[in-house]
Amino acid sequence: MPENIPAKPFREKIEDAIAEKDDLLQPGDSVQTVSDKMVTFDTNMLPVSEGGRLVALADVPNPGLDASSYGHDPKTTRISETMNRDIVFCYEDDDCAGALRKMEERKLSHLPVVDREMRIVALVACEDLRARIGKATADHTEVGTVGV
Image (cartoon, rainbow, N blue to C red):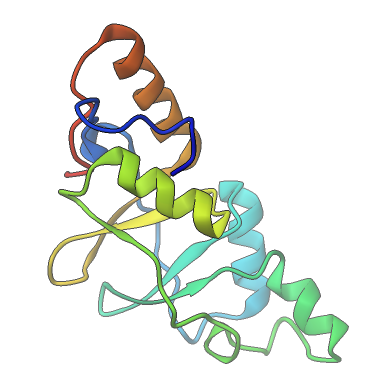
């Protein structure tokens, strides 16, 4: 376990650390659209959904550039051709330290937060989790779960 993640009892609720989800990616979106959103949201990962449910991750940094380096047009190449179905996520009732650990293991800047039906509830930022865990540790308070 990374040293900077406190073990229980310090727990922070994910619901307090989430950023609101914006318009979700769909498998039919172009890799150029995905690249543009990654820049806009300053993230190296975005969830891909079908019917609001998490089905994959767009986790290739700058997928538009990646596609063009293989001779594909980023405006016509769909994210469904490159998305990662080996998804990583946290449930809204997971603890913050566990969510942060998942992000650090996969080197992700954000993590999708889902309900038990795999509906995307939000995205949580690594920096927000670190800040909340740090504050809870300094204040000697409970850190809680990820829940919304």
